[in-house]
Length: 252
Image 1 (spheres, one colour):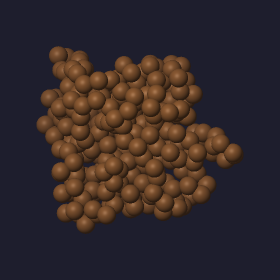
Image 2 (cartoon, rainbow, N blue to C red):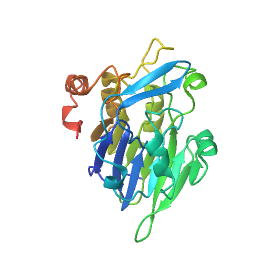
Image 3 (cartoon, rainbow, N blue to C red):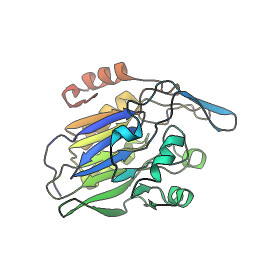
Image 4 (cartoon, rainbow, N blue to C red):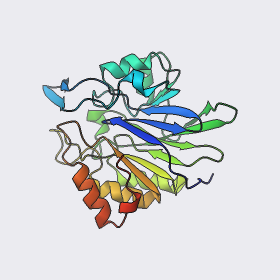
Protein backbone atom coordinates (compact mmCIF):
# COMPACT_ATOMS: atom_id res chain seq x y z
CA UNK A 1 0.00 0.00 0.00
CA UNK A 2 1.62 3.23 -1.11
CA UNK A 3 1.45 6.50 0.79
CA UNK A 4 0.17 9.81 -0.47
CA UNK A 5 3.14 12.03 0.24
CA UNK A 6 0.91 14.32 2.29
CA UNK A 7 2.08 15.60 5.68
CA UNK A 8 0.20 14.24 8.68
CA UNK A 9 -1.14 16.62 11.34
CA UNK A 10 0.75 15.84 14.55
CA UNK A 11 0.14 17.96 17.66
CA UNK A 12 2.87 17.44 20.29
CA UNK A 13 1.58 17.69 23.84
CA UNK A 14 4.80 17.00 25.72
CA UNK A 15 7.23 14.14 26.18
CA UNK A 16 6.05 11.17 24.10
CA UNK A 17 2.48 12.43 23.88
CA UNK A 18 1.08 13.70 20.60
CA UNK A 19 -2.30 13.78 18.90
CA UNK A 20 -2.22 12.35 15.38
CA UNK A 21 -5.16 13.24 13.13
CA UNK A 22 -5.37 10.36 10.71
CA UNK A 23 -8.15 9.06 8.49
CA UNK A 24 -10.76 10.98 10.45
CA UNK A 25 -9.52 9.48 13.73
CA UNK A 26 -7.80 11.10 16.68
CA UNK A 27 -4.94 8.85 17.81
CA UNK A 28 -2.95 9.71 20.94
CA UNK A 29 0.55 8.42 21.60
CA UNK A 30 1.82 7.50 25.10
CA UNK A 31 -0.39 9.74 27.29
CA UNK A 32 1.46 11.77 29.93
CA UNK A 33 -0.35 14.73 31.48
CA UNK A 34 1.04 14.94 35.03
CA UNK A 35 2.66 18.18 36.25
CA UNK A 36 6.44 18.41 36.73
CA UNK A 37 7.86 16.34 39.56
CA UNK A 38 9.77 13.24 40.56
CA UNK A 39 8.70 9.77 39.47
CA UNK A 40 10.21 6.63 41.05
CA UNK A 41 10.92 3.81 38.60
CA UNK A 42 12.24 1.15 41.00
CA UNK A 43 15.53 0.18 42.62
CA UNK A 44 15.89 3.66 44.08
CA UNK A 45 15.91 5.29 40.64
CA UNK A 46 13.92 8.50 40.19
CA UNK A 47 13.27 10.31 36.93
CA UNK A 48 12.22 13.95 37.01
CA UNK A 49 9.74 15.72 34.79
CA UNK A 50 10.71 19.36 34.31
CA UNK A 51 7.96 20.84 32.12
CA UNK A 52 4.16 20.70 32.17
CA UNK A 53 2.16 19.33 29.24
CA UNK A 54 1.11 21.78 26.56
CA UNK A 55 -2.53 20.79 27.02
CA UNK A 56 -4.75 19.03 29.53
CA UNK A 57 -6.62 15.87 28.49
CA UNK A 58 -9.86 17.84 28.14
CA UNK A 59 -8.12 20.26 25.76
CA UNK A 60 -6.90 17.48 23.50
CA UNK A 61 -10.46 16.55 22.62
CA UNK A 62 -12.05 13.14 22.08
CA UNK A 63 -9.56 10.34 21.46
CA UNK A 64 -10.53 7.37 19.31
CA UNK A 65 -7.55 5.21 20.28
CA UNK A 66 -4.31 5.36 22.23
CA UNK A 67 -1.08 4.00 20.75
CA UNK A 68 0.86 3.05 23.87
CA UNK A 69 4.42 1.87 23.28
CA UNK A 70 4.68 0.51 26.83
CA UNK A 71 2.99 0.95 30.18
CA UNK A 72 5.83 0.33 32.63
CA UNK A 73 7.55 3.74 32.74
CA UNK A 74 5.94 6.94 34.08
CA UNK A 75 7.46 9.06 31.32
CA UNK A 76 5.35 7.07 28.85
CA UNK A 77 2.21 6.49 30.93
CA UNK A 78 1.67 8.51 34.08
CA UNK A 79 -1.16 8.79 36.59
CA UNK A 80 -3.19 11.23 34.50
CA UNK A 81 -2.55 9.14 31.40
CA UNK A 82 -3.85 6.01 33.11
CA UNK A 83 -7.01 7.87 34.10
CA UNK A 84 -7.51 8.89 30.48
CA UNK A 85 -7.31 5.28 29.26
CA UNK A 86 -10.57 4.54 31.08
CA UNK A 87 -12.32 7.05 28.81
CA UNK A 88 -10.80 5.86 25.52
CA UNK A 89 -12.56 3.19 23.41
CA UNK A 90 -9.32 1.38 22.54
CA UNK A 91 -5.71 1.25 23.73
CA UNK A 92 -3.24 -0.67 21.59
CA UNK A 93 -0.09 -1.73 23.40
CA UNK A 94 2.19 -4.67 24.16
CA UNK A 95 0.69 -8.02 25.08
CA UNK A 96 1.98 -7.78 28.63
CA UNK A 97 0.78 -4.21 28.90
CA UNK A 98 -2.74 -5.16 27.87
CA UNK A 99 -2.82 -7.83 30.57
CA UNK A 100 -1.68 -5.36 33.21
CA UNK A 101 -4.01 -2.56 32.12
CA UNK A 102 -7.17 -4.51 31.36
CA UNK A 103 -10.18 -2.48 30.33
CA UNK A 104 -10.15 -1.55 26.65
CA UNK A 105 -6.45 -2.36 26.19
CA UNK A 106 -5.62 -4.77 23.38
CA UNK A 107 -2.19 -6.34 23.10
CA UNK A 108 -0.38 -6.71 19.80
CA UNK A 109 2.69 -8.78 19.05
CA UNK A 110 5.28 -7.32 16.67
CA UNK A 111 4.00 -7.42 13.05
CA UNK A 112 0.43 -8.11 14.22
CA UNK A 113 -2.23 -5.79 12.78
CA UNK A 114 -5.69 -4.62 13.73
CA UNK A 115 -8.22 -2.36 12.01
CA UNK A 116 -9.95 0.67 13.49
CA UNK A 117 -13.12 1.72 11.64
CA UNK A 118 -13.00 5.16 10.08
CA UNK A 119 -15.91 7.59 10.21
CA UNK A 120 -17.81 7.23 6.98
CA UNK A 121 -16.43 3.79 6.15
CA UNK A 122 -13.16 2.04 5.61
CA UNK A 123 -10.53 1.43 8.25
CA UNK A 124 -7.15 2.48 9.54
CA UNK A 125 -4.80 -0.48 9.89
CA UNK A 126 -2.46 -0.33 12.87
CA UNK A 127 0.49 -2.71 12.74
CA UNK A 128 2.67 -3.22 15.79
CA UNK A 129 6.37 -3.17 14.95
CA UNK A 130 9.35 -4.22 17.07
CA UNK A 131 11.22 -1.78 19.27
CA UNK A 132 14.17 -2.15 21.63
CA UNK A 133 14.42 0.23 24.59
CA UNK A 134 18.21 0.23 24.82
CA UNK A 135 20.99 -2.18 23.84
CA UNK A 136 20.50 -5.89 23.14
CA UNK A 137 18.95 -7.54 26.19
CA UNK A 138 17.45 -4.28 27.47
CA UNK A 139 13.97 -5.77 27.41
CA UNK A 140 14.94 -7.97 30.36
CA UNK A 141 15.49 -4.82 32.43
CA UNK A 142 13.28 -2.15 30.85
CA UNK A 143 10.48 -4.34 29.55
CA UNK A 144 8.75 -4.99 26.25
CA UNK A 145 8.16 -2.05 23.89
CA UNK A 146 6.47 -1.76 20.50
CA UNK A 147 6.14 0.87 17.81
CA UNK A 148 3.36 1.26 15.27
CA UNK A 149 2.79 1.73 11.54
CA UNK A 150 -0.45 3.33 10.35
CA UNK A 151 -1.83 2.64 6.89
CA UNK A 152 -5.14 2.98 5.06
CA UNK A 153 -6.54 3.38 1.59
CA UNK A 154 -5.59 6.80 0.26
CA UNK A 155 -3.77 7.71 3.48
CA UNK A 156 -0.12 8.54 4.18
CA UNK A 157 1.99 5.87 5.85
CA UNK A 158 3.03 6.76 9.38
CA UNK A 159 5.68 5.17 11.59
CA UNK A 160 5.61 5.74 15.37
CA UNK A 161 8.86 4.49 16.86
CA UNK A 162 8.01 4.23 20.54
CA UNK A 163 11.04 4.10 22.83
CA UNK A 164 13.28 2.39 20.31
CA UNK A 165 17.08 2.63 20.17
CA UNK A 166 17.74 0.14 17.36
CA UNK A 167 18.34 1.24 13.78
CA UNK A 168 18.39 -2.44 12.78
CA UNK A 169 14.72 -2.61 13.76
CA UNK A 170 14.05 0.60 11.82
CA UNK A 171 15.53 -1.14 8.78
CA UNK A 172 13.13 -4.05 9.30
CA UNK A 173 10.21 -1.60 9.32
CA UNK A 174 11.55 0.07 6.18
CA UNK A 175 11.88 -3.29 4.45
CA UNK A 176 8.21 -4.03 5.07
CA UNK A 177 6.63 -0.60 4.81
CA UNK A 178 9.08 1.90 3.35
CA UNK A 179 9.10 4.51 2.18
CA UNK A 180 6.85 6.10 4.78
CA UNK A 181 5.39 9.58 4.63
CA UNK A 182 5.76 10.55 8.29
CA UNK A 183 8.15 9.21 10.92
CA UNK A 184 7.27 10.09 14.51
CA UNK A 185 10.52 9.43 16.32
CA UNK A 186 11.03 9.22 20.09
CA UNK A 187 14.45 10.83 20.40
CA UNK A 188 16.29 12.63 23.21
CA UNK A 189 19.15 10.13 23.65
CA UNK A 190 17.63 9.08 26.98
CA UNK A 191 19.98 7.51 29.51
CA UNK A 192 19.52 5.08 32.38
CA UNK A 193 22.10 4.31 35.08
CA UNK A 194 22.18 0.58 34.35
CA UNK A 195 23.41 1.08 30.76
CA UNK A 196 26.48 2.81 29.35
CA UNK A 197 24.65 3.71 26.16
CA UNK A 198 21.48 5.55 25.23
CA UNK A 199 18.11 3.83 25.53
CA UNK A 200 16.29 5.86 22.85
CA UNK A 201 17.45 7.30 19.52
CA UNK A 202 20.01 10.05 19.69
CA UNK A 203 19.73 12.96 17.26
CA UNK A 204 22.07 11.50 14.63
CA UNK A 205 20.19 8.19 14.80
CA UNK A 206 16.87 10.02 14.40
CA UNK A 207 18.19 11.61 11.21
CA UNK A 208 19.48 8.25 10.00
CA UNK A 209 16.13 6.62 10.78
CA UNK A 210 14.48 9.28 8.63
CA UNK A 211 16.84 8.43 5.78
CA UNK A 212 16.35 4.67 6.18
CA UNK A 213 12.57 5.04 6.14
CA UNK A 214 12.59 7.50 3.25
CA UNK A 215 10.34 9.66 5.40
CA UNK A 216 9.19 12.95 3.92
CA UNK A 217 8.30 14.33 7.35
CA UNK A 218 10.13 13.59 10.62
CA UNK A 219 8.41 14.62 13.85
CA UNK A 220 10.63 14.08 16.92
CA UNK A 221 8.94 13.53 20.28
CA UNK A 222 10.17 12.73 23.78
CA UNK A 223 13.34 14.83 23.65
CA UNK A 224 12.59 17.49 26.25
CA UNK A 225 10.80 17.90 29.56
CA UNK A 226 12.67 15.17 31.48
CA UNK A 227 16.10 15.14 33.08
CA UNK A 228 17.13 11.76 31.64
CA UNK A 229 17.27 13.15 28.10
CA UNK A 230 20.81 14.04 27.05
CA UNK A 231 20.00 15.72 23.72
CA UNK A 232 17.32 18.21 22.74
CA UNK A 233 16.12 20.56 20.04
CA UNK A 234 19.52 22.07 19.24
CA UNK A 235 21.12 18.66 18.71
CA UNK A 236 18.23 17.51 16.51
CA UNK A 237 18.46 20.58 14.30
CA UNK A 238 22.23 20.14 13.97
CA UNK A 239 21.98 16.41 13.19
CA UNK A 240 19.34 16.82 10.52
CA UNK A 241 21.28 19.69 8.94
CA UNK A 242 24.47 17.62 8.91
CA UNK A 243 22.57 14.74 7.28
CA UNK A 244 21.12 17.05 4.61
CA UNK A 245 17.61 16.39 5.89
CA UNK A 246 16.72 19.68 7.55
CA UNK A 247 13.76 20.25 5.22
CA UNK A 248 12.17 17.04 6.51
CA UNK A 249 12.47 17.95 10.20
CA UNK A 250 9.18 19.10 11.75
CA UNK A 251 9.81 20.50 15.22
CA UNK A 252 6.28 21.75 15.81
